Image (cartoon, rainbow, N blue to C red; front, top):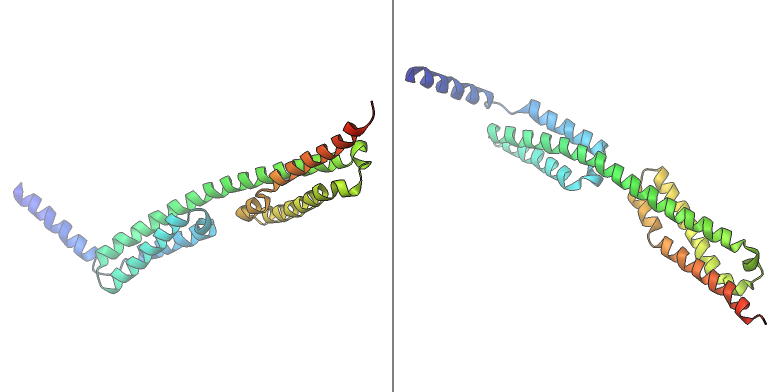
Length: 193
């Protein structure tokens, strides 16, 4: 029995040596393919850490192969492939989260701008002097510009750009609405009873 175990260990050792006698080209190509797929899925943006680790592992695999350390090259190639596949999965999830956040931000600003435009059309507000509404109107027009920029970015799948375009806009529109309400309330307070 010990002889059989010894023979099996010897055969395993020979198989491992033969398997590691040449560069792990197949595994390195698989890793490169997985990296390319992850890049196409947006991993460089939505799973940057894992994607960078995959690229680095493949580079280390190539370095190890150049030094004829094929076992180490194989380990790095397998690590690279697994990290790239994980980065692709994370990118899909990250993209979906970013899209949802961008859509919510655009919807919130759109609703507020619509409410502000509606308020500006109120007969009580239309009778106010233009100078009393100049600042809120300018804020609403700026918000509309930001909203258009955000919608364009959303259509181009540039979710972070859409989120950035709407950043702080909701607060500025809400401040404009408060200013309109204050301006509308001021003349009513001055009217004789």
